[in-house]
Image 1 (cartoon, rainbow, N blue to C red):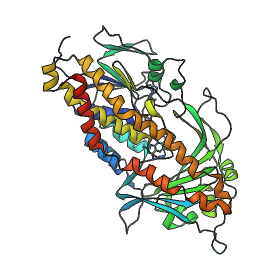
Image 2 (image 1 turned 135 degrees about the horizontal axis):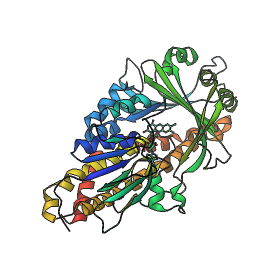
Image 3 (image 1 turned 120 degrees about the vertical axis):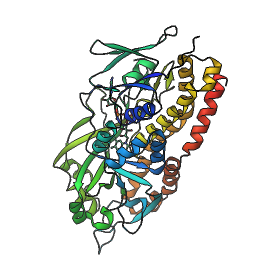
Image 4 (image 1 turned 90 degrees about the vertical axis):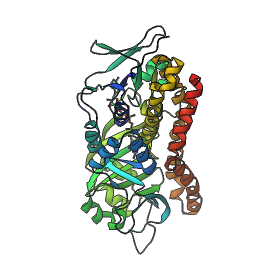
Length: 446
Ligand code: FAD
């Protein structure tokens, strides 16, 4: 075993939100990083994304540059309420005529308090553009599609091969290549069902709509505040994504299959959404009437049926959606990827510090141990999210909402929704950092 004093050289595969946050965190800690992205340019769709306070705290610890990008990308408090700086998620009945004398009335069901500036929302494309600016020059390599990883015990380095016939070496590979991860398939094998995402039988339609039009459609109060409208077999969420735009997403149950070889987006129309929401309340239908006439239908896949049995193998590990792609009903998939990144960044000073030197650990052994610790710290929580997201979607979309005699029963779900949400929002990242260091040190015998 040879001790190599210099910092490790890490290859990141995939330049989505999680890969870029990781690159920002590792470069800040002096790690030599190369990020390989298959696309010609970085791209995110023009839709909203939200992060609760604990995720923004994780971003701050990873690198203040990530929070800078979030804010310069135009993030706003999810509730633009001039009289109350807190962020709330308001659940509201979206179905049917609820008061004869007022067709705009919708019954409030639950108001979850996320605290002062407790939930920040932003346009994904603008956040990603500004995140790229935080990555030092020379780190990013575009048009590099990973095809194979070779990690042999007796070789100093791991080899990454790309579809253009080129290859590179690194001390370790962190794969953030998303829900259709190539790295996952390489690690688990093509015969393993966990190598492939599974259809959750939900489709989503998303739109960005000028705020003044939304005010005319649903009223000022609802426009400025995040609302989740629940009802039979569908739900709708909307929130401001900057000071003049509302992001809205409708999720509809789909009993049909969606083959994996079919693209995950298909052409859809506003008419389809209005048909699915035929008996919903007037504000919901008014809002959907502002969606474009033609729009994408997004099939929602996840890794719920066949979770990944282990997030690491040797000097390779899976992070973000590559490890635990979730349906979006908690709005926390990327946030859990950010928590993964903090866990990994926490171990970096330990891998290069005094005690590693004293133990005469090789870089390979230090990284293998770090990835074991990462798997132990992150797998249970992230797989819980994947399951919980499906569970809360079932609660939001209970058929019982359509039956006045069963509405009280349907409403009793909100205690569970609250508990599940708080498990996400009140995560103690400081404890995760402490546990991570303790486990890593025990593992390497420090
Ligand atoms: P991705 O964003 O998928 O990035 C993967 C990258 O890897 C891509 O750039 C891809 O081109 C590249 N890549 C793939 N294969 C290769 C290869 N072989 N070689 C090289 N590069 C490759 N999360 C939240 O936290 N808050 C929210 O409010 C929220 N809302 C959501 C709403 C909806 C409707 C949906 C669908 C999801 C939502 N999520 C939310 C989840 C969030 O979008 C994802 O968890 C997050 O984008 C995953 O990021 P990632 O970087 O892991 O993967």
